[in-house]
Length: 116
Length: 109
Image (cartoon, rainbow over all chains, first blue to last red):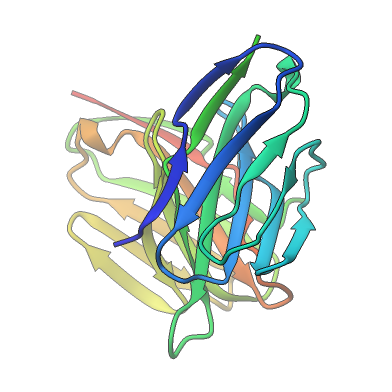
């Protein structure tokens, strides 16, 4: 059973505010990811990390930033929220399945962000 | 051309019908994943496949590596199966998943 948590689950905030979306996992996975998903649309990778002090931008350009100071924690920050940031943000972690070489991803429940 | 494609995009079925969702991909992969996302919910992994066929309850997933094609079947569909089903691959060239656009399934009572 995956243990990956996101807080808050829902957030409504005004333009210009700084926000941090929390993501934590208790599985000891090195690899973690942030995806953005607009309603009815596909997932887009915005950030990923392969371990502590490692962060990379994903395929979709994002004004958010991430940090990875501890293995279990991968927060995402928006310095100045705008209505265009309204979306669902999904965090995930992955591990290499023994014997196969393939990676399995485990997803958090998501944070639904609305910027007014 | 997207690296992972799914068909159909949307599917409406009557309760009890047999459902098939298709996925095709264009890159070499170490595994293919079928994911389920309920409205407003997170994503749950249904299957991870690298060859052959897997079955879990009413769900069956198959993959043909030579043809770069996978299918997800739902037997005796039920309204609680209504969700978005996403095909994703773990490509050889990297460690990040590549996702398909999803298939939105509605099963009517």
